[in-house]
Amino acid sequence: MINDGLAILNGNTINYDAIKIADGQFHVIKNHKSFNVELINADYTAKTFSIRVNDKIVDLKVEDRFDLLLHQLGMDNLGKAGVSELKAPMPGLVLNIPVKVGQEVKAGEPLAVLEAMKMENVLKSPADLVVKSINVKQGEAVEKNQILIEFEN
Image (cartoon, one colour):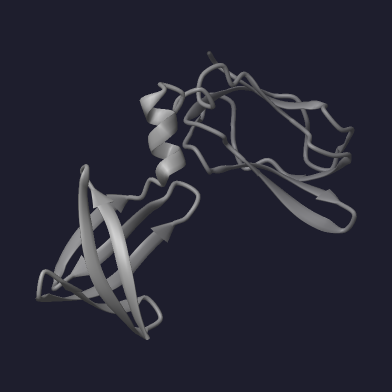
């Protein structure tokens, strides 16, 4: 299957054709040039990818039109500023707290695992933060909106 594509790279519009060869492998034609592209690593939450293009590894970050609009409006860092605590999104049982006080955590790293309605829910860091205090213990029952972890400002 041939997929006609359009991408914007550093503000420049790029037209290309792509054929999927296998899972994570593509044959791309751009400006009458042929490229073998392989997906090496993908973080869909952070929208970052490592790909191999003709034996050269390239790291890239994908932004859609909404990401670009938020950046233009200066609103792309609002979610990172002012995060002071992690609250329980639902009542449940604390199964695991894989972080320690003073630990630096990256956005997307697991902070706590809650069991609710027989399902495990991994609560992840919304930004790069430092753990100030942990207010619950493994095995403890928690209520909705109970503060589980506090972060340094």
